[in-house]
Image (tube, rainbow, N blue to C red; front, side, top):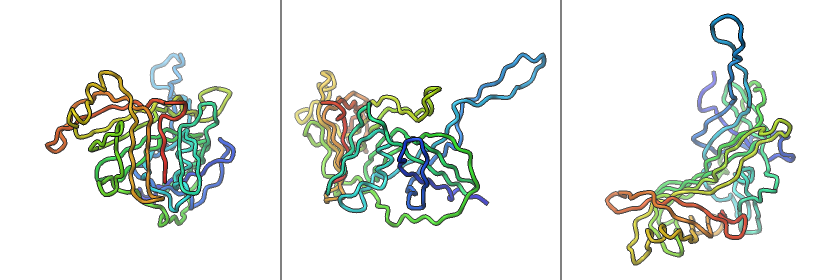
Length: 308
């Protein structure tokens, strides 16, 4: 009998986007908050004139499959390697450049073909392959918690097959650091340190399968990076946030989690506009919520994620 804990996701980058590749146990993802979308479609009643009352069958259109899940923002297993989930970021519309010490992700040029993955979903009752998988990405960091990426993935529906039990091990999968003072190297806006309660961003993309009748594939739509942070309201002499909001000022934002080489995640944004989103009671401290708009400075550079 199938059980809930048997659910599992594997993903592997495709050589040719849209052409499925075989996945193995080593391609399993250490995911949480998982929602399977084994079959999604638009249902339309046939609505024929038939001279009688009663329901009619419904046709399925826009059939596709996918999943949504969280992956901890863990560092690479070893220096000079990309993180274990690098293929998920790449197939969310990010370029990856790696050298001996750092792995850097930046938004992909819109004219560039976005890589795709093959996903296998296993649930103890059946397993299903989904090809041409791409998706949107968001990031969340909260005090005293491990930061994580949220992936919203969609691809081409394929009929399920019988479940096959396999052994999967995650002993080599690193865990993310907690967002605590001993682990946070920096959180600054315009070079000013802000005491941060939470920080998040999303790429604003909406994955869609087979957008055109004669051109197949999953498209992501245009990106628009936005986010929010909750911080302790600084003294006016330290940073006049309201005046900056009023004047539409943009400043660089830096989030750096980690203090050791090969285990540090640095997120940097050259031009961020802040927007008023209300005050916040932070356990008795006066806090402020700020909505964020990430603007490009010289092209596809509105945000950079670097494992160093």
